[in-house]
Amino acid sequence: SYGISICADEIMCGLGRHGKRSIFLSKSLGLNADAVTFGKAIAGGCGEMLSGVLVKAGAKKLAVTDRTSFQSHTYAGASAKALLTATQVLREVPLWYDAIESINSICNQHFAVYFEKEEAVKVCGQGAMWGLMFTQERDEDRKRSFASFEEISNSLNVRPYYVKRTNGFMISPVYDIDLEVLKEGCLRLQKAVEQSLKSKELDIDSRH
Image 1 (cartoon, rainbow, N blue to C red):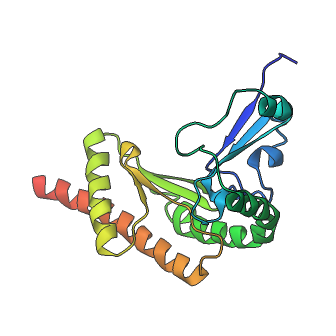
Image 2: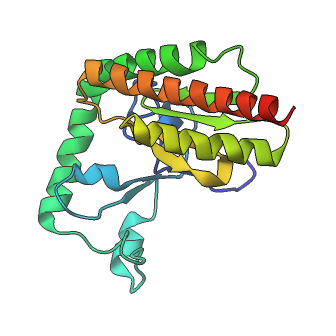
């Protein structure tokens, strides 16, 4: 009604990863977006760098002009193999909804529920996307906890995606992961967080 086009950026949360049993989160939220972008996972690991965008209107006009949506290596033109793979991935995503719910249940139990009363961390996540940040009041405490976590998690042979800028980490398991392997990985991350917080307490005690 305001004449504004809406673009839903689902590079991270699209293709069912959001856990709401739809390919795109914007659909499950009832958002009638004019365009939806989605990420490299659409290539299904076939070796191609592939991303895409769905648009409600204008695709044919774009195709017949000299303009291109290709930018840098991520959005470079893809081979027929990659495009065929992407088509099949879109068809197959709904078959993995139950697996995504299982991933959500395990991660929720090990992170959201377990750290529910811990004020020094904040857990965010749903579906197959989860993350945790250290949230102490002082920046130096957050940085110290994160550095300790990175060291401890490596010693436990579990390496999430470390996000230094926010003093936290992210995990986004593949849909066909062995759930026992996921449980073990989450348990090790849980222990690493706990030990990082305890090392901070020990540091305070030693200064006193």
